[in-house]
Length: 285
Image (cartoon, rainbow, N blue to C red; front, side, top):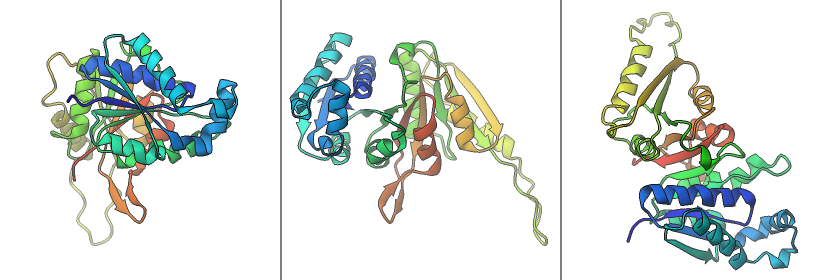
């Protein structure tokens, strides 16, 4: 069976925009679309969703949520096969489980009354930190799928880019959408030598450029590469590059900490602050 594009829906306008993105993604990849609603979401968001829909809480039912999402997806991409499901689970656990058989998971990011980061941390960050496939998080009001033919795909180039899952995913997105692929790599000038130490004689800028070239070595035919190598913090470089982009792709080599798998600071930062949709792509250990 073809791996589906999975979209987590909850009845909010932001999750319906995620349906739009997921339907477009499924159409581009020739994949089915799967819309899932984790029914225990309503434990802490049901009242807010009902307020958005101007309906009593008891009328905001799971089947209504997925039914509305399904209707929207079929209207947007009539040729894409669509299935729906209601998961009797917390959204984090249900979506991570769905990621085992998905090609990608798409999530909306809502911001109500300054609570964007809290809501993102409760669901999207957890899923992005544990999923088995790429997770695309739509950032606020900046992730309009209709502009998919006017921007570019941005790739955060890591230390070892050759053949990585993030490079492959970003290159596929650029090829499918007919967009340039901008590879971004930041470098930092080493601090001065300490007394008794041999000065560092490497060239960090050249090393960064070589790393970018390695990442762009085997692009699909027709993908136009753009190289962006600059001095400074990686997170700041990526946030700048996200302006006017369609999608920012970052690899995630998860760290095993006290509370389980965790994302690094760069992935965490761009998920909260990027000006476009962000794809977090898990890298094998």
